[in-house]
Amino acid sequence: MKLVPVPGANGQPVLWVNPEHIASVSRLDYDTGNGVQLRADLKIEGIPLQRINLGDFASTADADVAWSAFLGELSA
Image (cartoon, rainbow, N blue to C red; front, top):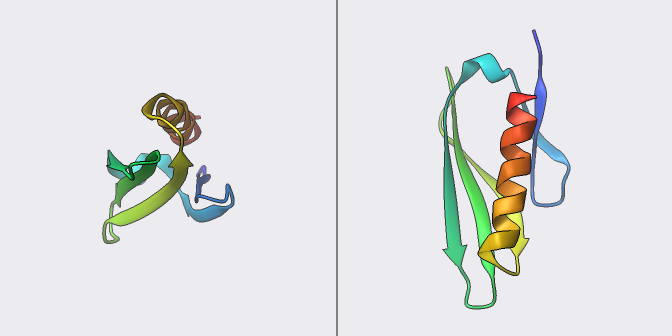
């Protein structure tokens, strides 16, 4: 079994998951007027939906980079 960390906004793991048990991952962007808050809804088999805070970014392009890194962590 392989566990991968799911990082929070501060970069520290808030949850460790087995990627084989991830049912879905959805990206949520919130425009703050000063940037973008990036969140993810993570559905893992057997537990309720988890909303993960991936941080605040100056632009959507910056959030795109963080999103790609997050997906890379889950699929590594």
